[in-house]
Image (tube, rainbow, N blue to C red):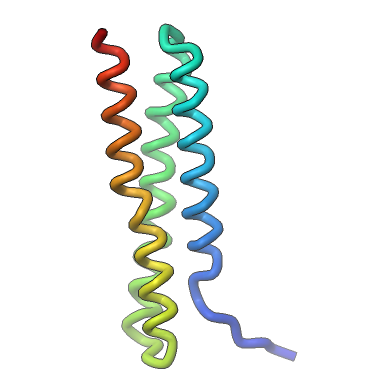
Length: 101
């Protein structure tokens, strides 16, 4: 038996996981601001998350273009995934401003 699921359910979990890990790394950095290892780990995490989220976004855009009946649901999932971009920019701004002083 094959069940039909809405494409992109993984993307919501990915967005929430990316947000959670990013928030945890920011909190650790704020607790230990002079530790370079946390900065390097955070930088690599941002690059890795960018790659994985970009691939997932392309997958969602593909399904958005071919699956007309589920466009609204897929569009919401795309917006949830894209919501991490301004959050990441804010977090990076906090990290960079925190290290300048």
